[in-house]
Length: 486
Ligand code: MN
Image 1 (tube, protein in one colour):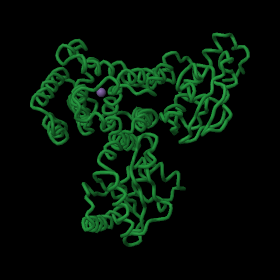
Image 2 (image 1 turned 135 degrees about the vertical axis):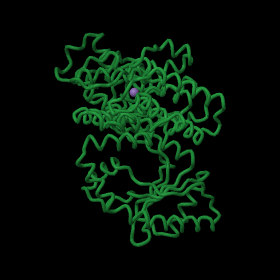
Image 3 (image 1 turned 120 degrees about the horizontal axis):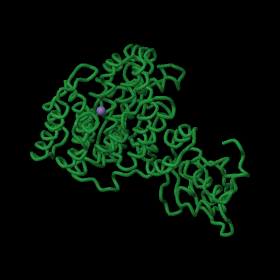
Image 4 (image 1 turned 90 degrees about the vertical axis):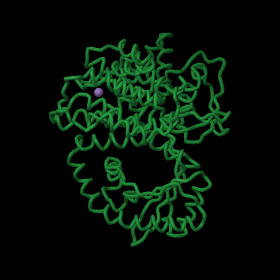
């Protein structure tokens, strides 16, 4: 059961700097929402207010700024009660009302044939582009709904669960919100693939207890040894792999759980980067590391910003165990992602509410009539990303397989339209070659070029480049020269 008391307890634990005024405001928002939803009952049986409360609790567990928690409490008011957005604006101000408006605009995403689905998806991205906080409230809303999914008919359960795994969690991943991503995935997995869920559950329960027992002993030894070597540890604990993540990994490794070394892992949190490496050295002195299983995501972070040291060691009793070593900031970045930068900020700067790739995508989607649109955006968001550099050292984030033309359009339309040659790491490269992580790319303009070539459509990867090339070809009437497919 959710309650105001429980919400305030979570806030007390997670917001050490919250003031009395802020806590009073939470209570005032709660009273308003409670009164607005008075008499409404959920499909699962409880009072309706349980749902906004559950949503707000998830947001507070993720340590999101309190105005987001308040918007979570109010998120269903305009749609489900007699109170309007104007009422919310009058009572609680434009910022909170703006977030609630965004959520109301996104609406309740429903699959009703592909078109409805695409339409809702488009709305979601447009709302996200205006204010990324909206999608985060949507995640919490969805997670709470998944937790009461048992009350709905089976076909609805499956639809909502699949949609969560296809749309919501890849976006959470892109925003680096590992904790919410994992919770959404596991809540949805149960309904989306019930048999596979049971299978993973059984495998986990066969193996995990023994590993956990051994890990507890190993953590004790690690703690003692690190202290003896004067290495300051902030936290050390065991963590269980989430089921959906385990499931995906099992599929990758021929369903062989013996190949999965991070079923249970030890996590060590320290103050700074030198201490991360020092701690890893000590761990390797206690237990032998497994060859080529040392991963330095501090020197080379993952595309979504994840940083950590991972090492797999031969532990006690022949158990192979992974250690993950990182600083507090890295840990918060991994769990909270984009939101980790918002902690303890009273007001977010506008720039924090916008994410450039989401904005680009939303702009492109606004004018999108294409039926294959879903496939195309999957390429943009859901694929792996690479990082390449401009000659000045600016980092450019592109989808895997992007070419110099994609790079050029990403920087500036003019640079794409007049792209003559590309230098990759100082060597001339073809315009259709695939860029690799870490490449330094320089575009040389061809002043005589009038515009993009229709041939580029055969290999460009990003929707931005495709959009600009098509636009140009439309304007200049080149369309008749285009291949009929596509
Ligand atoms: Mn809701």
